[in-house]
Image (tube, rainbow, N blue to C red; front, side, top):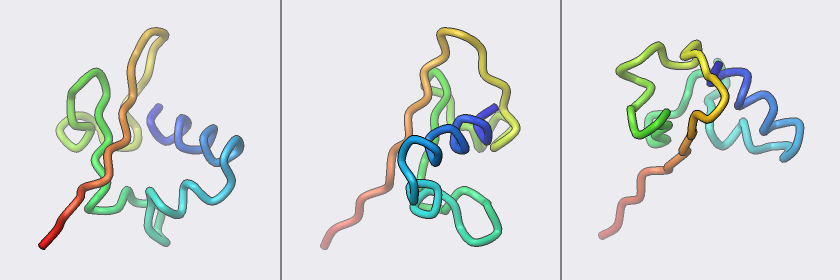
Length: 65
């Protein structure tokens, strides 16, 4: 799942999950996660299943002024 993927990232890169998820464990509003170019918000969010060959992209929103 996407949630499992985030846990694996946290093991390899301690502290990264806090940048992606809030204190309740929900993906932050300004972080977009895509599975094969599909926004996981329109799939099953953190419980979206993954399979071999899937591509997960984590893209923080950028704002400027």
